[in-house]
Image (cartoon, rainbow, N blue to C red; front, side, top):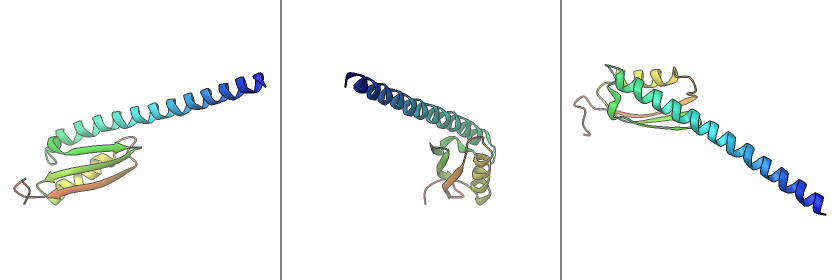
Length: 102
């Protein structure tokens, strides 16, 4: 019985470690993607995305905020989809020519 308990404990620990490592790797990839997207959007002269909100979960990117044109909204999505690791974009940007909430 003692050997069985040790084997089960060992299996449980290795399974937990594997899940933990996978979570850490996925989180690191999301963090890397988040940083790259923020830089790309902020540096684009058309999007001017420094104030946009970006969330990344398992490669799915949600972007929120206000841009001045429909073209800027479409470009933001296009820029994000070009990023390595971006699987999908939930584009929740709103267009306001004045740059403020109307």
